[in-house]
Image (cartoon, rainbow, N blue to C red; front, side):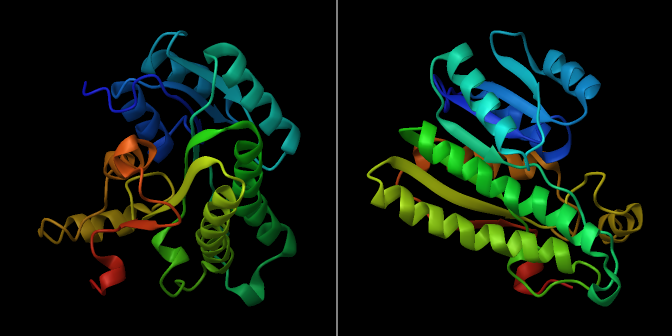
Length: 249
C-alpha cells in the first residue's frame, strides 16, 4: 500500500462490478474510504463486504438518474466519513445495439439518462458539496473516435460526457473551487458489456497490446487522476484503449 489516497473519501458509482469494483478496490488499497453505489442491492452488500469493513467501505443503492439519490449518497458520505474528496462517475449501460434508424426513443432515453444525465447530476452535486478534490468521469474511446454501427446512443452519451467534463473543469475554476475534473476513455475491457466473441478475437492475436483490457488497467488511470499526483491536470481526457484510437486494427 502506497497511501496515494490516504485521508480521502470517494464515491464510486457503479462500484459493485467490473471497472467500478476495480476502482473501489484500488482506492481502498491506496488508503481511501469509499462509498460504492449501484442498483443491485444484494450484490452491492456482498461486494462491500468483500472489499473491506464498514469503517472503510459502504454500499448504497442508487439510481444515478435521480437527483434525490445523489443528495442522499453525498450527505451520507459526509456524515459517515466527515468529508468528500473524490467522485468517480462510472455507472453506465450499453445501448440496444440497434441502428439509429431502428432505435426506440425509450431505449435512447435510458442510455442518455444513466450514461450522461447521471454524470451531470453527479458533477452538479459534487460542485455544490465539495470544496476541493477530484471528479473523474468514465467515458469511452467511443466518445472520441467515430462510433461503431449500433452504438449511436452509447457514443452520444460518452461523447457528451467528454465535453461535459471540460465544461465542468472550467466552471470549477470560475467558482474558485480547487476541484479538478477529468475523463478516462477505456477501450474494450473485460466486463459483461463486451461480447465474448470480441474478447476471443482480440485475446487470440498473441500481441501484448491487441487484447481486451482488464478493469484494473482502467482503475490505475482513475487512481492517478483522483490523487494529488495529477494536481495540475484538469479538463483533460486520458485514453486507455490499447491503441484503438491510434488506428489499431
